[in-house]
Amino acid sequence: MAKLYAMYKHPTDAAAFNRYYYGVHAPLAKKIPGLQTYEVTRGAIASAGGGSAPYHLIASLSFPSVAAINAALVSPQGQAAAADLGNFATGGVDLYIADTEMI
Image (cartoon, rainbow, N blue to C red; front, side, top):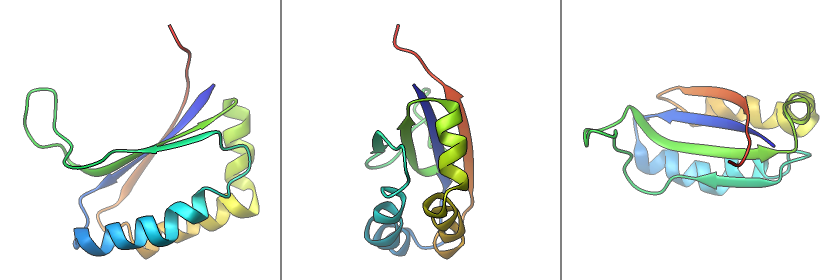
C-alpha cells in the first residue's frame, strides 16, 4: 500500500476552506482512479508537545502502490483535483507520497 498525504496549511478563511473542501474538492478527489481510502483530520491539529501545528487539515489517500499514485496523478481526474487546489488552499498545501506497510 502507498499513501498520498495532503497537508493543508492554515487558510485565510477557514470556514470558506471547509465549505469548498467538503463540497467541491473532496468529491472531485474521490473520483481519482485507484483510490482505496480517503481520510481527513477533524478539528484542530496539535503537535505532539501540545502546541498548535501549522496545518488546518491533513488528508491521507491510500492506493495499492506508489506506481498507482503516480498513474492517478496524471489521470484526467488527478489533474482536475490538482488544478482545483488553487481555488481554496490559500495557505498552501504540501503533498507527500510514501510507500507504507502494516507492522
